[in-house]
Length: 459
Ligand SMILES: [Ca+2]
Image (cartoon, rainbow, N blue to C red; front, side, top):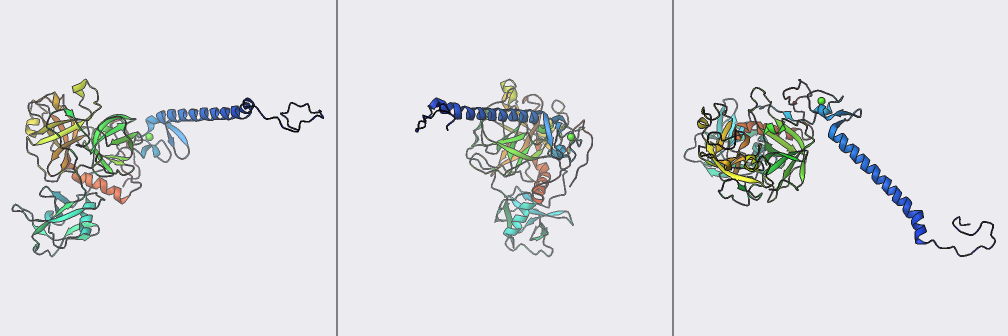
């Protein structure tokens, strides 16, 4: 007996044909419960998402045992989770490290090798130089890409001795019994194709820029807000300024956006590590350099490409033309960020002039450099903090990192930049550590003022 039948149960007059349901009845019987179930599911999901958003905003989840701590206890220098996860994914400091025993000269990117026994540098002779040696040299500088090398003739102003190179325990060495360099050639080495852009910028100050000109420029963002500029060094690493991270030292909420000259609407990349040099509150402007390691390597394209590091001996004389870029030409448009990337052409300002009594009065150290236009002007507002100061030789090089300055490009107070060539050894060492321990490296934590000391597993 069909319970839905309107036949009385005791009726003997049973209709052999079942009465078909009307669409309304089917809807009442099947549709409404489904809709109710979906609605309750949706509200449960909404509640879960809301709870997660609130928890993420104000709390941090310790792994074992599972419990929440306020987000203010994240990266504050004290272990609040039993296993210390709250202090693990934080901005970490990394010391200068040992001297890297290889370097590249501005003389056609030729390779030089240090003999640690004597402290002398030598130029690498092309005799018996192999691809394996090229790879070792580049690995010593923290590159993991496939290098290219070729022979170049020894120039007339070659001042270093030219010797054959050999390899021992993953490092290049000067060959002990080195004879004359029979080939008469040096090794010109390129560890990574870098510093090439699709478009050459025009020389006009403070104008809109195209990502085609500056494919290495990235936006570094905290909680989706643009904080600093930065530049792509290789598929894994972004170069920027350390002071960008003074306010927020937890790594989770930092993201990198690459491949666009607009600030909004382009995909952001997860950050794995942020590394700086020890912060000294006595000299807050010193060592304003940071490296960001991305969680996943970048794929290079026309709009995402690396810029070259400077050569160790790249000395830029006053008035050398340079470029700065950024979204942060703040004074120009009333303290707001620009939605479109802006560029300005500037030039090297002599550091004696920059340190004069009417300028920075000795605050500019040897590891900083000044750039601006000598006559000053609003067009030379420096770009974003952390963004590159760029010099074009054969390729574009990041010679400076936008760091500090007073006002906006007045004639006596130009922008001050971290001199990248002073930190090559540090950059090489930081990138090398990644290769030695690709999944997890414990860097010493950074302690900004107000934090107490802490010791975790240090390397
Ligand atoms: Ca803590």
